Image (cartoon, rainbow, N blue to C red; front, side):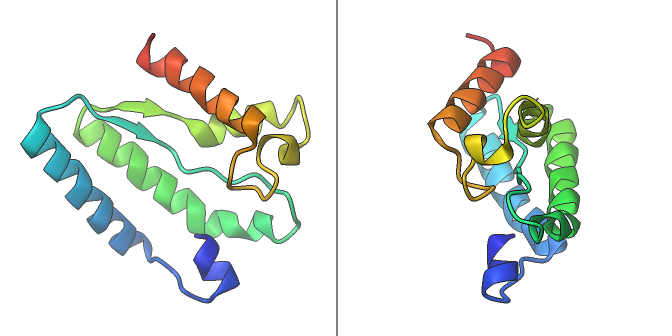
Length: 118
């Protein structure tokens, strides 16, 4: 998503799904492991970030669809970060909106444990 906006190098949703599916299929076939998929997320640090949702939201839907199809555990990080941003400014969790701070990493770990189990 980021490269679409800073370098004009988009990843279309169909390509995102195709490449994600290749990874999930391969893991499923070769490892027979229980899959855990995490939503990509974006926090609105700048005003521009709000328009980025048009690129991100369809990709989140792809992750949801693949999680259902492969009976994977889904960790809803976008939702988790949105809710956390009601308690603390978004930059606290991810200074650039995408890369988590230490607090953001702790938030991810807590969400992981809640959805995957300890």
